[in-house]
Image (cartoon, rainbow, N blue to C red; front, side, top):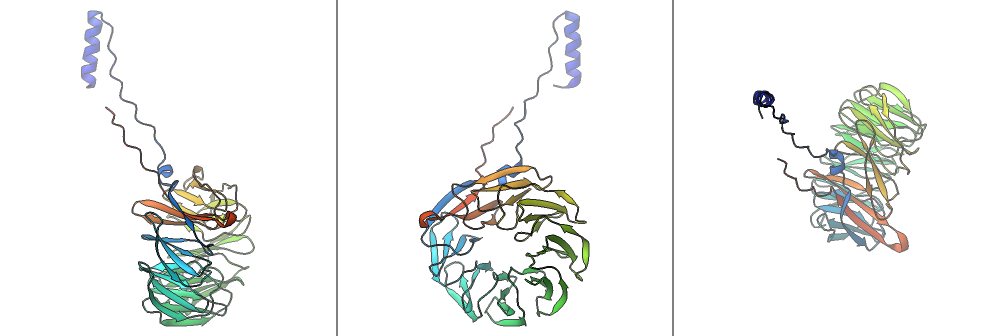
Length: 371
């Protein structure tokens, strides 16, 4: 009702001696629920049995989930229902790498490229056994072996360059034309992805964690429990090293303002990206098995427990949990599908029983009309 009209009615009511009529009360809006809780993949959509023991974490990409099994098979399952799409006989003990509609598998003596849609073999290239998971990105396949680092062209498997290099035991990182290779002895190599030539090399206390790379900065943990941020241009320190309670687990993750680090002291830490200031540091009731994952405005941490914990990326407050019926066997995998974040995981292991599951955000409740 218009304020002037309400005032006139009150005046008239007072003149006539009638009790004034209060203005209508606006409807109460529905309670606000943080969007983080709705976007977390907390609802298990399906789970299926796996016939053989998995030897590497699952990988989800597009319409498929890819598994590496102890039986010597690489298996593709459909995201929609978990049904088997295809399997290929390739013996491996590393997670696959997926890029551009192909699945890259590190076998004992070769790198094998499979068609992601049907598992057909596209090419294979001779290679020694790998010491770190393959990297497939932007037309490149990078393989680290005991004594070398080799770059293959993903289109046909041809070798582009090879470097004599030992001690690459964690996954390298590609950012633009840069390739960052952390070594067990503490050296961090920044290479030209196109040629394999050094851009710069820095030494720290090894072993090093996986590297989080931005166009202007690279961030990683060291074996003596420090966290470093270097300038990508020359490898010099961008901000002072940060002391951690333990070594970094997996690869850190970052957004426009913050960097998030999971460490082996069961703690998730958030730092201001511009200067390394510690913002918050909640603990989790399990030991992280991999780096944190950003799901919209939440940071998710996984371990071998039957739950994953989520924290608000802005302030570190609890932002929900992903609860499973059984404990995780190995780190889960996340992937964006449209506007949804999906999670696939392998649970169980008791009496030789393993389950593959897919979880997504719960279905949105129907809107309630308000007058």
